[in-house]
Image 1 (cartoon, protein in one colour):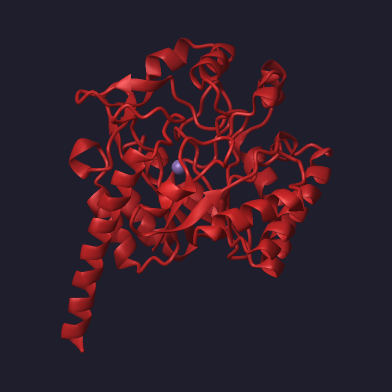
Image 2 (image 1 turned 90 degrees about the horizontal axis):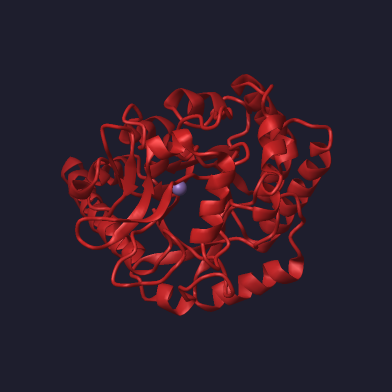
Length: 361
Ligand SMILES: [Mn+2]
């Protein structure tokens, strides 16, 4: 596995490349420009980030996210122009050296939580999802909560300009079924796959977070069957997955190690994160350690080792610890701890595998 770390850029992150450089094992930066969905990324900015990141000895292999315009998800004729722009961005990024693009196909909302900093018993805080609050919450209020708690940070996937037109956006989906949305994803993938192949850029779809429908909106990336269906949409192997343990794992029916073993060589990007689920459907993001949450991170990393995973991995989110003031979920300290835990398990698994191989010779 190749360990990478998400970074939001000089103006938009409390963590510096210099700090990331000192986390053992990190070889690349997961980056993006803060452009709105549908826009073409300017070369000057792409190459500015490339030289900045490579200057610290990191690769720029993974971009997260290149957002898909809502009109593409809705299958509108106006989406065609945005697909053309998407293709241009794939070409630009491929030429610059990017090998994987992580994206999602979630209608209107990207990831959803009801609280950014919910206290954990040890005095740290984690992002929290309280199901009873979601049920009575009006989507408008959710956007207000998000914009207030996010303080000065731009939240990944939460394009506030776009969300000003929330009512219209939600209504636009009222007649779109899951099958329609899947069909629109197929149309999108079919058009971009030749460009991905030409410039050697793999697409990795991120699962819905949380993995169930909200506000009556269709969601098509939330179970093993959904992932199977998505991989079968194209002949091309450039259509792949960003397997996020914390997103899928919020549903106890999703068995992450089983998915890793089934989808193995089509997983291009792994997000590893633990969550603690409660019986009432709530969940909180906790430390990576298996005993702290509901997901067995040891089994998950073991599964990646068993399939000899050579793709990219990142600790997904971290708690807020040691009084760090960072963007929610994306502080330095707890993600660095997560990396050391993941690499500890990985190194052990690899060692055991090599000893076994030697014995079989
Ligand atoms: Mn994720």
